[in-house]
Image (cartoon, rainbow, N blue to C red; front, side, top):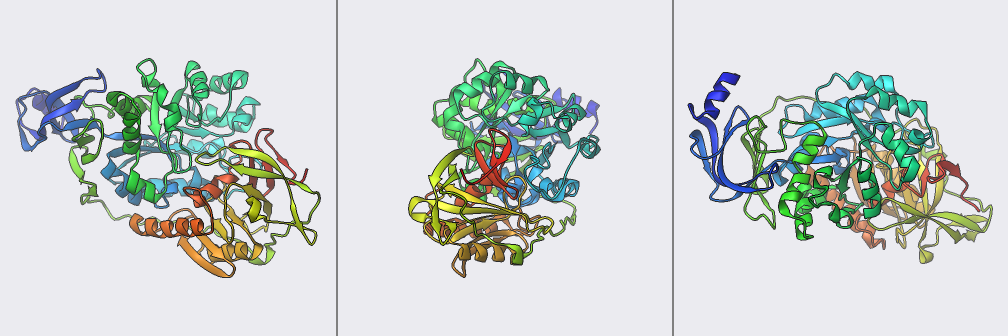
Length: 568
């Protein structure tokens, strides 16, 4: 449809293709709720106001119309399904656009993994934009399946679906002038550059912002978030499966700085997506916490659209995409209808059929380990050990000192004191390299949990009350060519195959959800009190979030940004 025809429809001289009649429009520009009609043609909003005629009329009878929700930062791989299945989970919840950082699959397969994600999303009903992964690998203290330098990332600049540079997690590298990190930032100069700097403050934070980094989603306190806001950063409030920051940061959503705040999910597993929802859950929770409903909706629509320079969406106005969400209750928002480019794509929690060309997308195998090289034994070199202290509902950890339990000259798990052996096994090249340490806070009394989802290098992580159970869980993962397992002794209690890069399943998300729920239930039966123990152990290998983590190279003191010994 040419511009002349669109102008004619906007003038009311020709009928629109669709008119949404008698709705309460949430105007994210003015903060008003306006009773009006919305005229749509060629996937765009062409008119807002009464008196429009259309080929198809949908009478909303006073229901609310909001712009489609935008997730400002999400790792689709954490849903354990590829983009086309992920769309089935989030579109019924009103999410019409996501900005994803595919650094999970990139750390396994490099550029091949990023292109796999772009290809799988192609022609789908969900707009998936990509920020190029900045940290592959995340640090020099781990083994990843790929390494992406600035010249590798520059090949993505011409792709219209690539917006900018994703979370720059190596904040010590930025602050200390690491040329490899700074060259990536320079390559994306003039584009959106996202940040990731938990706890950074003072002059170091100034240096980080001066480098050109514009946002952060790692704030856990108001004080931290406000310091970053004062320096011009946009704050993404995160509510993930294992990182709950929304409640603590809700006071940011006030008129004074409400336009500098966006909402994001970061990492959410299938049952949370399907049961709680996605960005709609964050909006609902914010409103229930006392935030003005329009402010909450702005943080999910116009704010991320403006930040990412997606000026064709995020609001209901002529010339914007007709990505729309319909609901009846402003204060207890439950999505009833979702329109993508003017087409009804979901209704009452269910996706409607969406025709798309059949495209074959495949990813090569990525599990390469030698089981004969695995040895979890830790010879005692002292009586006191450094222990990773897990913090419920957070990604940060504590650096603890504990008295080791020593048996026959070896340090072993002590479930009675919640000291659980934890190992990270390199799985990309079959080197046999592995780091071994201890966790406190996982809470299992017996058995073991293992996974190939281990942020961000995605080597095999395994935590267990005894070595035999740990080996059984790892052997099950190797047999599945990637995935998760819960074991006790020589018995596998539950497992989930993740053949796509060891991160995602090729099954429908409902099947994945059922199998994953069995895993979590089995972990709870072993004694863990955590909401999601499987995702919990995966983040204990993330060496860019303080304070103590473990990689295949050993224990990492994140605050000092260096490897450290297990024994004091």
